[in-house]
Amino acid sequence: MELNILVVESGGNREWEKVKSYLKRRGVAVYAASVREAFRVLRNEPIQIVLADFNLNHINSISFLKRVKAIKPHVEVIFLSGHVQLSKAIEAMKEGAYDFYEFPTNTKLLMAVVEKAVEKQALFVQKVELERKVKERFNFGKIVGRSKAMQHVIEIVGSVAPKNVNILLSGETGTGKEMIANAIHYNSPRVSKPFIKVNCAAFNEGVLESELFGHEKGSFTGALSKRLGRFELANGGTIFLDEIGDISPSTQIKLLRVLQEKEFERVGGNETIKVDVRVIAATNHDLKKLIDQNKFREDLYYRLNVVHIELPPLRDRKEDIPLLVSYFINKLNEEKDYRIKGITKEAMQILLAYRWQGNVRELENALESAMALAEKDVIEARYLPAFLLSEQPHNGDFYHISNNLSLYEVEKEIIRLTLEKAGNNKTVASKLLGIGLRTLQRKVKEL
Ligand SMILES: Nc1ncnc2c1ncn2[C@@H]1O[C@H](COP(=O)(O)OP(=O)(O)OP(=O)(O)O)[C@@H](O)[C@H]1O
Ligand SMILES: [Mg+2]
Image (cartoon, rainbow, N blue to C red; front, side, top):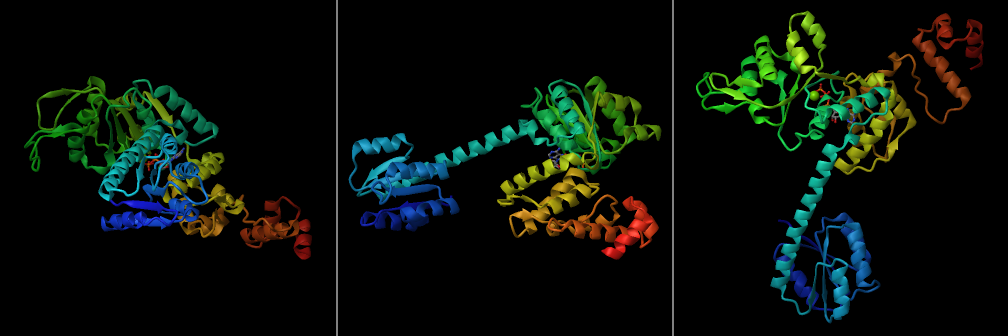
C-alpha cells in the first residue's frame, strides 16, 4: 500500500533526519512541513499519518492535534519528542493521539506502528463508506420531488414497500422507475435478502427463459452445465423485471405460473422448484394497449399490477426541476470534486423551458456536461448542451433575456423575437403579444 506521511518538526533535532531518511528508504512519500504549512498540506495531499514533534513552535501540541482531527478525522497523529512530560503525553493520548515516542527512536518499530495505524485507518474509512451507502439506500430523501405528483408517488412507495405485494412501475424513460424499485426493496423486510435485476429486453426469447428459470445441463446446444435462474437466485428476496412489455408470449405463460403457483421448472428439467420472490416489474410501454393488441396477457398484467405506480414525465412537473438541479449539483460536486455553487437565472430558464423527453436522466446528463465545462463556480447558459439552446425558438412561452437589460430593452427584445416568430407579420405578432396592431406599429417605430 502507498504510504503518505506528513512530518511536522520544530527543527533542531537531528533525530528527525534519521526518521525521514528511513521512511524514504522504505518507499514512503514524506511531506515535510512547518507548523504553518502543515494544515495546507494536510488538506491538499493524501496524508494518512502525521508524525509531529511534541514540542512544536507557535502552537501547543494538543491544539495542533485537535486541528489535524478537525481537518481530517481519520488521520492518525504520532508524536515524537526529545524529552517527554508524562502528564502531557497522557493528555495527548486522551485527545486522540495514536502513539507517543521518545528520541532516539527505534525506526523499525516506528515503521511497524505506522503500518498498523494505516491498517486501522483503512478499516475506519471502509466502515464510514459502508455506513454512508446503507444510509443512502434506505433514504427516501434520495427521491427528489415536491410536485404533487411526486409527493403522491413517495407516499405510495412508503406504504407499499413493507408489504409483500407485487408492483408495476410505469413511466417514460428516465423518470426513475429503477430508483423506485430500489427504494421499495431496501425499505422492505426483504432488505437483507437478494435483490436481483433482469432487463427483459436485453435477451432474446430462449436466452431470457434460461436467465429467469435456469437450465439443466445439455438442455440445448451450449448448455454445458446446469445453471440457476434469476428466480432461484432471488429466493427470499425481490426480483426486478425491467422492460416487462418486451417479453414473448411463451415466457409470459411461464412467468404467470411463477406468480400464481410460485413454482417452475428449469429449462430442460423436470424437477419443480418452489420459490418465494417478490416481483417488481417496470415498463415504459402502455401495457393496456399491448393487451388490446394481444401482445400482453391480461391475466399476467393483473398478477403484476397489484399496485400500480405511474411516474409522471418531468415536463408535467416542472416545479421539481430547480430541486433536482440543486440535488444533482450537490451530488456531482461530491462525486467529481467540483465546487459549483449554483446556476444563473438565465440557464435555469432554459432548463425550465425544455421538453426533457429523456426526463430526469437527461437533466442529470445535461448538468454533468455543463459542470464539466463550467470555468467558474456557476453554471451559465453557454455551458449547457447546445440542443437545449437550439430548442428555444420553438417554445412559445419562453424568451431569452439576460438580467441586466432595462425595461425598454426587454420590450424591444420581446417584440423583436415575436416578430421573428410571426415571420414579420405584424398582425400575427400583435395577436401573440396581446396588443392592438396600431400599438405594435407605433412601438416598432419608437423602438
Ligand atoms: N425523483 C428523482 N430524484 C432523484 N433522482 C432521480 C429521480 N428520478 C430519477 N432520478 C435519477 O435519474 C436517473 C434515471 O432514473 P432510472 O434509471 O430510475 O429511470 P428509469 O425510469 O428506470 O429509466 P429507463 O426506462 O430508461 O430504464 C437515475 O440516475 C436516477 O437516480
Ligand atoms: Mg430503468
